[in-house]
Structures are given as structure tokens and as C-alpha cells.
Length: 122
Image (cartoon, rainbow, N blue to C red; front, side, top):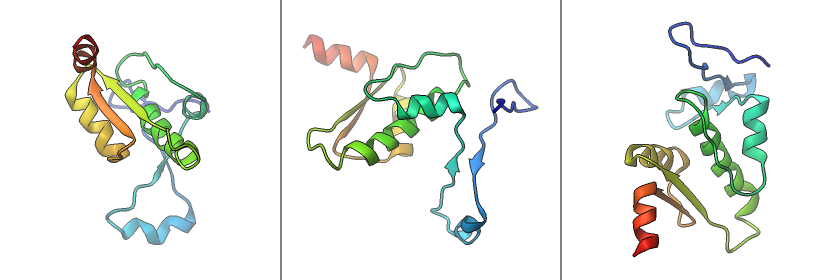
């Protein structure tokens, strides 16, 4: 699938998978459609183990990580009591954004790179 670009900027459009079965769900304010992932994004989401994503702004890094964290929670946390996740970013704002998108969970931690380094060095 080709990446569809926003005509008002050189960034990928966010596409959602909505089927006829979801029509009644759309009126519910808490309903969130499943985001459509490209094949490359799907590979990242379903990769086993730790993932490091590097790229320019607007390339889908955050979308991939949010979906990967949700995917790992669904597929791995049930059968593994030691399951944990650590999200590290440069900015507090991005940490909060991802935490809000993924949802708070006792097995997931969100921190900035500087805070992580300070804790390791302490």
C-alpha cells in the first residue's frame, strides 16, 4: 500500500479501519476506531522484543510505538507475570501523550531520557 500524504503538508495521513459493523459504535463518545497501519508499521508492531525507532518528524514513530505497546499488552501480559514496558522519550510532553493514548497500567513506565540517566547514575 502506498503512503497517502496530507495535501496540506508532507506528512502521512492517519487512516482508520472502520467497517459497517462499527456504524452504531460511532455515536459513542468513548469509541476509538482502529488505526490503519501500513505493512511496515504492522511489522514494527508485531516484532518480538525491544524496538528502537528513529526517524524524522511525522513519519509514524509514535503511532507505531503506541500500537506496539497495546499489542504487547494484549498478547504477552496475560501469560507472563513479569511482563513490563518502558517508554523513553526526550520530552515529558511526548511521554504524557503516549501514556494517555496507551492508558495507565502498573506494568508500564514512561520517562524522559534525562530522568532515566539520572536514576541510573544515582
